[in-house]
Length: 140
Image 1 (cartoon, rainbow, N blue to C red):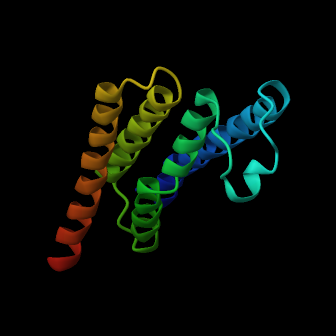
Image 2: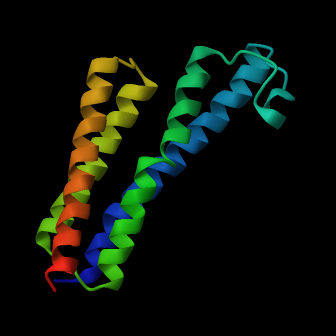
């Protein structure tokens, strides 16, 4: 199995993070220009209430530096340990897919029931990756 294939889902997660970050930046400029948000708010992220459209995207951007970090770590461990196989690739893409769905829900309609489901699917898939790796390491 080509070990480099695990890097493609990592790149897809990077693109999601970059895309949400750029979208957030655009919305920050919009909030300053159209909603009269004081640009000084962004020095310490306090002193004003963000418009809802910006708060949703900002919250999601922060979220992309929480659970996905564990995904980056396990993928790099798999890559460095030459343990990448078809099942890990499938799990990796399932996690990325769940995160894209989660991002869409979180930044648009934000229906909690659907958002929670997308989050749980991603968490379950990521847990499967970690548990499978643990079993492989312990039984080696």
